[in-house]
Image (tube, rainbow, N blue to C red; front, side):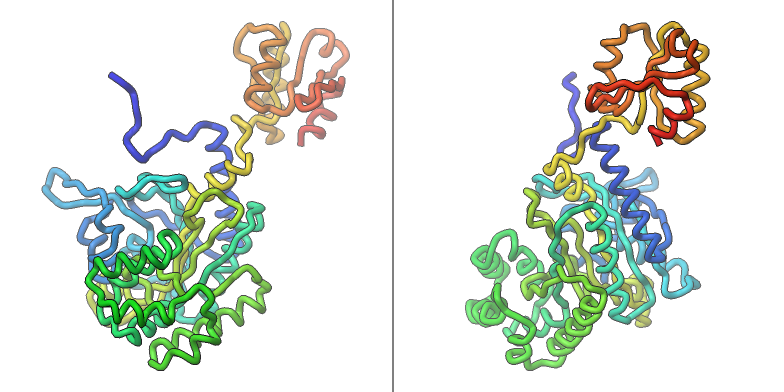
Length: 424
């Protein structure tokens, strides 16, 4: 048989997995710096949970891309397509949670959708959400995390921000009553441009008058100040007020890479207020590196009551972040080892030394075969191990080790303690 992976999934080789682990460690570090707590939810969910009213929305592309299956009890299940619905389900099942509940989760999600650079059918999301606070300070804090994470990853980003209340107001003013379907089309503005969105709106049954009215308001250069003069309904004006408050907080936090984008919609049906997406202009990846917003109604709708529990969150897309970093040649090492210990006829003493290195928290690999020095040096070089420690009878007689720098080929005869200091 011909061995191959399923379409839209990938094996992650060591050099990429090491970088991926570093990215996840960075995310975890920043999440916890801001007071978010870890949570783990199942990959499998009941299909009715993912399809519930208040979730993605019946017209959402993502629900059409959901992988479904049945268990032996003939229950319809699905692979989760994101982490937010699972969080809402968890919150609904645990009504005694202390609020605000600030959680982070990292896990695999699945969508049977189109494949391109940065977009796959099995991928990781790394989420942060704050449940139980209606304050826009919670939205600002989420964006503070975003800014901090990408600074640590040394990526130049733009944070695009809009508000669903404002979008609803714009659509209402354009005479569009069926808003969810229009928002799904508008969400593709960056990908297919205004002509593509107009074509999709026509296919979805909107009139030329409605579309023309919409695009008199939705333009690339439209600012909040311009919109204040054009919007005349209560919900739209409330959206503008919330955006002004949020941008005020971001200014205080010195987050200068956040911009207003009137066309930003986010295609999922559960968003109720602020929405945001993160892009890297230097990346060949066209997809957003992170995205999210406020989802104040979902938990109440899942539970089946009218007691809304406010919530806001954002998902970091690990794959587009990884593809961006790889395009910048940041995936090079194939092992986390700092040093490769090469014994020359001194197995027992070399084993003692490699254990000492590991006890000092120095990641150390050890020669397991009988290959010559040159082949072992080539092996270490291929894996990108920065140092090789050569241990032979001559070195042991002097109570020293020979440490070779694989970057420039220089060698130093050092005591083990001095070698450990250098490696640390």
